[in-house]
Image (cartoon, rainbow, N blue to C red; front, side, top):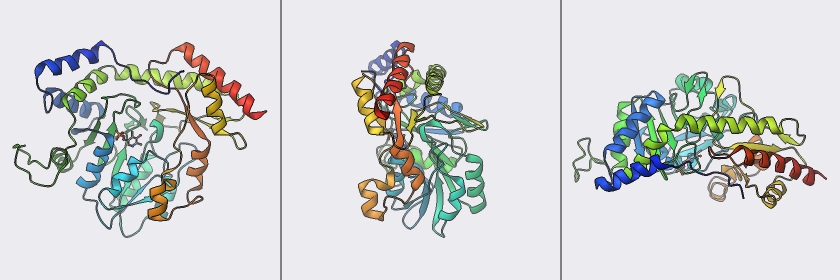
Amino acid sequence: MIPLSQPTIDEQEEKVVLDVLRSGRLSLGPYLTRFEEEFAKLIGVTHAVGVNSGTSGLHLCVKSLGIGRGDEVITSPFSFIASANCILYEGAKPVFVDIEEETFNIDPKLVGEAVTDDTKAILPVHVFGQCCDMGQIMGIAEKKGFKVIEDACESIGSTHKGGKAGSFGDASVFAFYPNKQMTTGEGGMIVTDDDDVARLCKSYSNQGRATDMQWLNHERIGYNYRMGEINAAIGCAQLDKLDHLLERRKKIAKLYSEGLEDVSGLILPKIKKGNDHTWFVYPLRVEDGIGRDKMISKLADKGVSSKAYFFPAIHLQPFYMKEFGYNEGDFPVAEKVSKSTFILPLFAGLDEDSIGKVIKAVIECLREVSD
Ligand SMILES: *Cc1c(COP(=O)(O)O)cnc(C)c1O
């Protein structure tokens, strides 16, 4: 079976992990400092704070920007659930806005309609790695005085009109779960140019400790969201090969698009002008009348993993329907995309032979389900 994703781990990661184990310093050591410094440089920001997941990073951004009870944050219903849950953690309310069919990203033209007196921030998600229209989003935010938190968890290395994903907002978050473009096992990284946000995120991630980080001096209620030294060491090794990892993903996406471009019944992913895209996943859509789920099960029969993504959309997850009264039909574009999209295997180690097999299987399965 060709898997959907697989991390690229070699002797480099083994070497640094062994180095950590032998050093006896398993937390708050030199690899964390190095990973944060190199990461900040990569994105071109002044601060990076390592945390134990993308989700905890998002939570700390919401908290550090002072968003809380009674506040509203405008975000996308077509995302991984963490981008909305992080708003709920602080008692604020996620307000969804429908997406653009072309990019799957929040539609900036609809943001204005969702604004109320309680709106405090916009939380755009660069879905599947393609950047949102950050020019328009930052324009709205600046005009209205809203904060912007970029969920860049799927978009390391992607750019929009030359600007890097994660470099536009007040604070942004990357994630390193094993299916992402680069991994630390579990882990996340907050990036920001704001000294106060960086200081608060660092403190909150480390039990609310004061800046001097005296072990039993807790200035505020914090969390244990620290990134461990082993994870940070893996992160350093992955950063060293990031260019290769991203180039390989772009190449595979290109081969998929070339191999499937004239196949009727499929809608291929589009890259908007001005965007450079590092492909967290390769999303394909089936046209109306073709069963997406049938495609997935037929692909599995031929040894190819695929998955409905993101399905269901966040507003149709049980908790959100119950708590906020959302229903089918509330965000028609997100629902249409969510019902017709599935992802193909995509990871740096996927070889040419497997890519050919996947393309062939998609074409055959499509013929079978269309008959
Ligand atoms: C992966 C991801 C996250 C965070 O995931 P963690 O598993 O907590 O690291 C957040 N938002 C999006 C859109 C993601 O894809």
